[in-house]
Image (tube, rainbow, N blue to C red; front, side, top):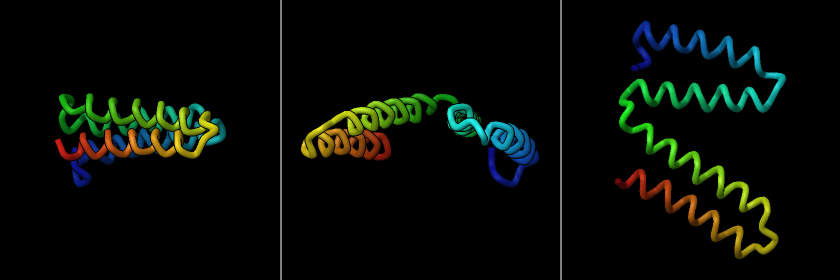
Length: 92
């Protein structure tokens, strides 16, 4: 889906309406944004959805571990894991 197609305009319109309907509930709003991103990315080529899913999962887990970590060294390690994973996916 490219930005100049009618499909994108329809997608963007539907996404925008749902996004603004959930703007008062952060949990649903984040879910709508994530789902919209997956749909947009998957529309281009569904075979690459695993890359964005892996990236999202690693970043989510790393974010939780960074928040839970009490030592600065451990927080940096989780940040490095996240950055390394994302750059490895990008490099691949």
